[in-house]
Image (cartoon, rainbow, N blue to C red; front, side):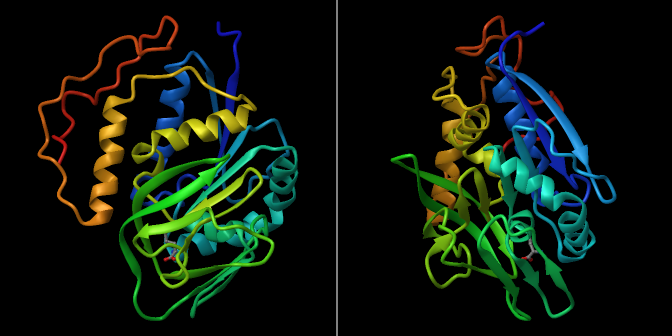
Length: 279
Ligand code: GLN
């Protein structure tokens, strides 16, 4: 039994807020914890469940279609809002992707519905009746003094504006970001982070997954991993956002067994044999 740290994660509305396989973000977090011998505990809460302010280190909301967001929004505010504020107040990471990000703000107005948000981020979102903002995107962000790039895919009709009480997560290098106009993407306040980037986000940005894990656990650093494959995925995502060709796939030699830094690790990094070839 592991006596080291354990990452306790709570996913909200995982069955509804999960477009573009956003649950992959949880898989990446789990793998990167387990490879290092960091324990992993996941719990799920959904509509109707009370969110008791517990000991979660990280709370996660994925993206969703408007109709699914609408089913969650009031419940989020009424039965989970207070606990989310409490969690953020004690430094737990709260991560929202796209639809989840919009609901972490003050609300999301569409022509069909007015959805409340929990107000953890000072952002407001209004949907246009017309075009969606769709495509590959890359964003430069600065978390703790080091500039890094987040890359992913966005598809939203909401246009988000960051208010004076918030800070954008990053600056758009390629793509649309919050609204396609002001060059900002996402928002951050303390340990609360929102972004429009799917991908899933953390599969394309392993370094960001590690930042989330370390921040959630209050660690200054994590054991290094062999990230050659993850780096290629990231580089390809950045190239796609820049409109550059991505290199032809090479035959993969999946890493087996132990990853650097994973004490006694037996995890494998490859897909099951039936997985389709990478594009
Ligand atoms: N339904 C929201 C929008 O269209 C969020 C979409 C998403 O999560 N990708 O803006």
